[in-house]
Amino acid sequence: MDLLDVIRSRRSVRKFSADPVPEELIEKILEAGRWAPSGLNNQPWRFAVVTNRETVTAISKLTHYSKVVLASQVLIPVFLDTEKSYHREKDIQAIGACLQNMLLEAHSLGLGAVWLGEIIRSGAEIRSLLHLLDSLDLMAVLAIGYPDEQPRPTKRKAPEELLVYKDS
Image (cartoon, rainbow, N blue to C red; front, top):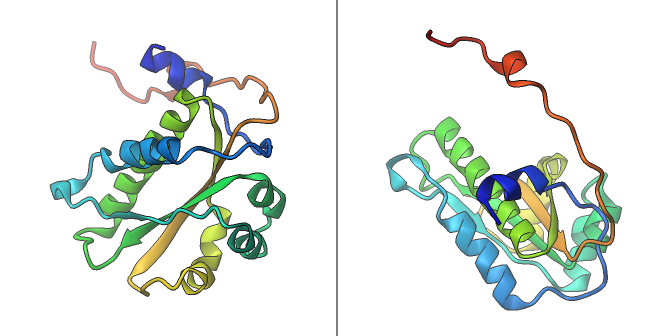
């Protein structure tokens, strides 16, 4: 599939089948995130992979999107390693690129995924649950699985609505 087709056809998936996601697909998603650009190539992202149902259930209690979390087969919390950070805003932007790479790879593999951002308010609790260092700031959680829904097409604003300047 052409990259632009992958980008245009990717949608947030919030309903998943009970089919397990093979380890090799999880590794491909992590690999896509690993290759995101970052300032000074500091690669400030860190990943956790959660498939244990007890841990998934515990995480589901820390978000308004508990149904999405419970339905997923894999959770990938993504953290900013503050000890490796050289410029917080740039590093957060890099993690956004990392997350997008992971979402696009999941889609290209026939998986569904959604970027959960509201859950960052529970970052300390998730760090504690996973026994992680305080130097890891939760940036998002990706909920992943085989889609059990057909997300509807979305519209985008016309380029002329978004363009604020163009030399002629």
